Length: 433
Image 1 (cartoon, rainbow, N blue to C red):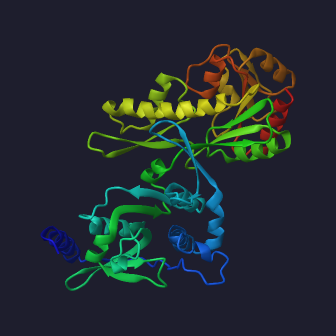
Image 2 (tube, helix red, strand yellow):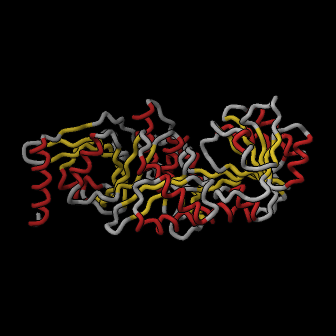
Image 3 (cartoon, rainbow, N blue to C red):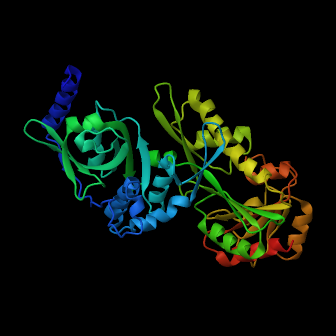
């Protein structure tokens, strides 16, 4: 053992001894090894990731899918916006020459309401302390190690779960769920350190900010033949708008573009300061279609954002805006409909903002349509439907404001978040205009 290695080992041992560190999570163990007659036996050397994810799901959710069910995802397509160059990346979940795509594998875990982040601050010098703190917080650690690491082999890479840390008389032991074994193992920290790549993934059932900002943004395009209308779903938490519209366009052969990330209203991303510390930010995707309003939503939604970092955050916001507009401009549409629901907005809020407003008192006050031209306003008004039209754009950074400035034909559907009946009625109405 080299002098530096002895020093690292001693420091880790002293940390455990002084703090009396001992922790072990009751994480179930599953093996990736298959029976000879298994229908997926050919995959058994390629599914350490899937097996670890199965253990995670079982621990947090009390039951988990079979490995062969998880394998169904191998041909799925993973798409995401690159926050580096603004381009959309697209990969299959399983790539034969590189095996499983890391982001796609964690996307599988996300389907079961688990959250994840790459832990980049763990090093060979501090991993004992870092591992313990994460385990104490009931966060899972998936560590990248050399294949057959227990026997000090270096042929390839492998994924294992760290489930516990024990401090014994004169050494530290890690308790590990190795999917290529039939049961968990104990390994002294020095042997583990020799095979540990320094790369680890945290998985949790609690959606903390760093998990939210880590997950990629992407736009899903669902096509049911091309026609003259494109539906845009900006706020992912407005589930009724998305589900009702998706059912509707399957019949009417239109297109829906939907933004996805964390199933919430805001989009999250991260930047780094001069010391490489990550700063987690959020923005409202319906307030980014004007430069000044993009800066405003960044400031209003992120009180911790320092002035010297605003330009970096603004550049990231531009990537998101250009991504949305690029998708819209790639479709040859005659009209676009923003499918939207609300909690507090109602048609009476617009009385002092425009003279072109018609209110049907028999309709719910939060069920109405916003349009971008006077002809559509007059048409909808004759049908006794509450409707709003602005002669001039409001300059609020919204998508409807941007499209009206661009001279595009545009509709916004507004209803209460659970009012499926009026939402469907307004969809049907716009279909006939």
